[in-house]
Image 1 (cartoon, rainbow, N blue to C red):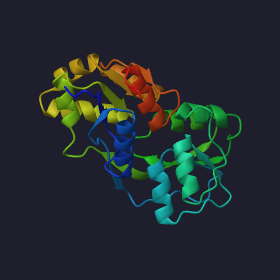
Image 2: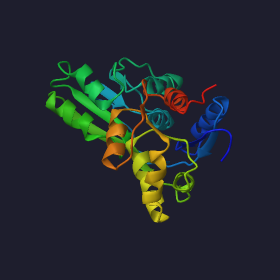
Image 3: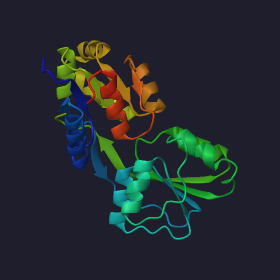
Image 4: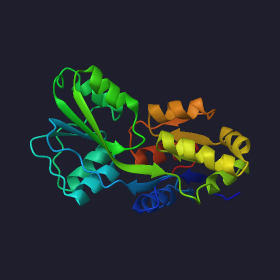
Length: 246
C-alpha cells in the first residue's frame, strides 16, 4: 500500500481526467485514473425553434458550438454550474440554472411555465427519463436530440483490479453510467464480487442522488453524496472522508 490514499477517478480520457488527477495530487492522494466513459458524437444539432433548450453537460456545450448552433429566442437552461460555465465559455448566454443540479430540479423549476411550450433537450443517449417525463407531465411539447453516445473504453478496469486487491481507499463516481461501467469492467475480469467487497472498505463517493440510487441498486455502499454537483466538490468531500485531506 502507498502512504497516500489511492482514489479511483473515472472521468473521460481528455483534459477532464488530467485535471482530476492534478486535483487529487494537490489533495495529497494517489489517483488511479480509469476512464469509464468515451464520447462518440452523433453529429446531430439541437432544433432551433424551441421556446426552451436544455443542456446537461460540458460535452454537449462543446458539441453544439462545433456544430454552429444558435440559440435564437430560446431560453437556454443548464443543469449545473459546470454545464453553465461550459456554455458561457462557448459564447452562449445561460438564462436558467435550477437550484438543484438534477433533472428533477429542472423540472421543478420549469413546472408551471412550460405548458404548451416547445422544449428541446440536447444530451447524451443515457439521459434520465425523469427529465423528459417530468416536462411532458408539465404540459410541454418535448423533443430530445442525442448529441453523443457514451460507451465504455476497451481498456477500462484497472480500478476494479485495485479495488479487488483491497488497495483502493476511495472511488469517485460521477454518473450512473460510471457505476455500471465499473461493474461491467470488473465482471469481464472475473472480479465483480471481489471489487464490490473491496469497495466496502473504501469511501464510495457519488456526485448526486441519481448516481447514489444506481450505486445502491447494484450493491455498492454510498458514503458520500457531494453537497454540490461538481467534480471538485466530490473529490474534496471524498478525500476528507478518508481523513487525509490537506
